[in-house]
Amino acid sequence: HNGVATMGTALTEEHALLLRRSAERVVVCYDGDDAGQSAAYKSLQVLEKAGLDIKIAVLPNRLDPDEYIDSFGPERFRTDIIEGAVPPEKFKLLHLRRNFNMQDNEAKLRYVRTAIREVIANIDSPTGREHYLKELASEFSAISSFESMKQETNEIRLQLQKKRSNGDNNDFSWNT
Image (tube, rainbow, N blue to C red; front, side):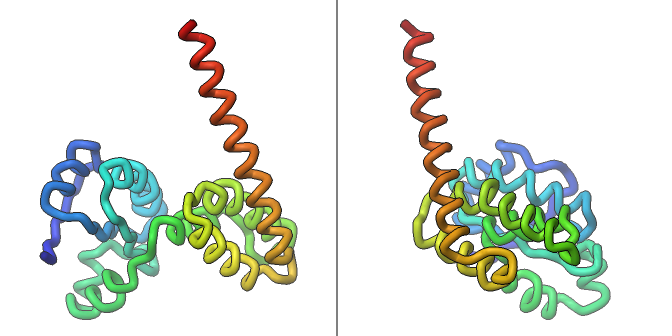
């Protein structure tokens, strides 16, 4: 079922649960400006928590959906924007990238390391992690190799696992 719902308010857990009742897949399309992209980023956690399969449609040139449709028409909005929507991990990487100067090699390295730490290392699926690492390694081969990126990802995942297990032990000892 292809339905379109527009909301002018911040997405809440209640909204996400209502969406979950009528859909399993959701394509989120916020305004293309910084505020819209930040709102899309924040909405991911709420939608993921509700168990929805999410993709994010990214609008170019800081346009909002109405402006895009007025300029290019509803058919092009559907084919270029909605059908071109990206998975949450890809959107998180694109969103993160906005904070780095891609003309500077040191900034590129900081982006790669931040992308690994904040996005890729948190992907549960080994296949998913490898997919995004290969994309990163392909684009930034002058900065770092796939193997070193993979090693850094594995080290971060080990640290995260240690934190989780230490947290569980601390919780347990606190309860006793």
